[in-house]
Image 1 (cartoon, helix red, strand yellow):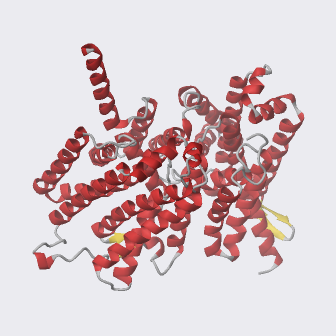
Image 2 (cartoon, rainbow over the protein chains, first blue to last red; image 1 turned 30 degrees about the horizontal axis):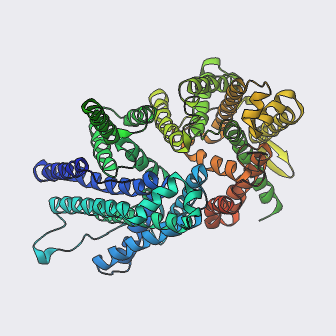
Image 3 (cartoon, rainbow over the protein chains, first blue to last red; image 1 turned 180 degrees about the horizontal axis):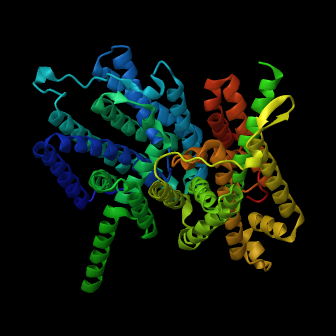
Length: 322
Length: 289
């Protein structure tokens, strides 16, 4: 079950402030990294919603992100609609795609759910990869950013865009925390820990699972909009299953089922990647070994491990005082 | 499109099916026995191809690679078994998927470190480098060899599983591992042996595929998905399922691509999704699984 503990709020604010300062004082390259972190953080939070709380390990979230990015691309670059309504429609499309996949796969669990989401994600990937109209494997370019010139903000500059991406991270986190604290979030956790019992008390597990995938898809859709606007070019690679796999790694490295953990994981992952790729061409092997070590160490992840130590110390202190 | 075209497509599909079979049989039996999801199976296939290339360079003959590469991959598999797989058996599918996904990354970079980023070829043995005439078409002899090898492995496994005592022990353990252990079968040792055979077959598939497709660092990831589809369509843990599944996927992806290219690419995923939703136990489920 999710609790927005004071420690989590503090870490959230600290992380966002640190990223904002890094973007403000760090120059162009730092801002690019901040945007990359923001996209990965939102995608990881969206996966944490289903995997951490609903036990649904999805390998189609890259595809959901891609559906949003491509819908945005079609509406703006291809059909010339204004940016804001297009972005809303694209996020809606991602939510609908997530809901449909969630509803169809709701009766499967464990490895079967993983395989089923893989199948739907790869289907979306293949359809876009094969579509000449969408540019196929050449991708699609010319995606516009929001036009906020009327407010004196030029989104085409790197700093406003990085801060805008961070603002969306905050919004997505708050939305996810709010939903996970609601009755719906509690029900989702209940389904995860004992599905037959939840069904026995009259909860429709299928509808809850589908809604969870829909909400998660909505968040992934937001990440898709930033991804599309960031380099203003999208390619089918966004939808490939390894994108989801990498985001899942980020969730695990940060701490499954904590919401804040995936964000910490995204920061650590992107910084590690850039730091390592400066020194060696072989950062994959490091990430792979760190991942294996994390899972073998109990799978709590960076933030989860810290929280684990904190609660253990508190428990020990309470035992001493008693 | 004359008859020769169709014969050619048929043979191509059969050859691809046999490669898929060599990979999926290991994956499916490992899942059936150990309830372990090994995403790194494709990486073992890749290692088979690269080890085969080195072994061929070392021994100066394709047949040296043919023998040594599966042995090398088996050794890698044995190390993995004792360091990771045995520990993760009860850890749930998510941890297994994550650890073996990490292994994909590790093997990817091991291959890049050891053999570089360039695609490497392996020469087919001289006796099979030509073409044979079959049903009115000229077809590379080496590809016919792959088909024959796949059929041979299929037949051998079928006989072992259905006619021998060890086969009966494996079937009993797939059906009910606890009960098999209670009957005095050393299930742990059986698991290990089956895992090694699965790895050896993945390595064999890799070395056999190398002369046709050449070895690349991406080959493990690209073959993984079709193999997983085969395993799920056929039914996890089932030999007949792996046979039927690899034929279905092999033909969809080869023959389908020849006359309905845009549909064939999606068709195997559609089939996978349909099977998972309508018949999650697979077309030919292993009993008890």
